[in-house]
Image 1 (tube, one colour):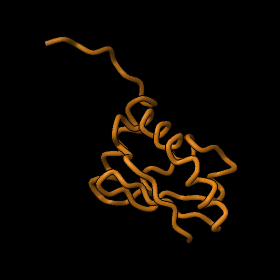
Image 2 (cartoon, rainbow, N blue to C red):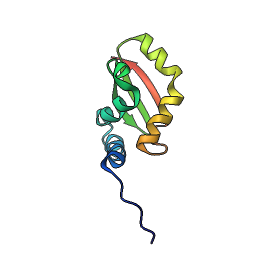
Image 3 (cartoon, rainbow, N blue to C red):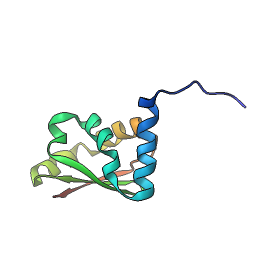
Length: 97
């Protein structure tokens, strides 16, 4: 059996949070990962709500944010999956608070 190199907490934590969010359905566990992915400006207007069957539902403060982020869905998914693991987020849904 091949041994893997040790991973840092920064590498492990997002994947653990993704597993927790998927198992519980509570996307709030992904808040640190979401905030790190989207940055402070977007995170002021958004919050992960649920993660079920790969669909991450994110609440937004306005229809404008929902529209803007919907256009960036592919990029956001790619960035989230880079942190959470391949296929952790298969789609994003933006819902008004």
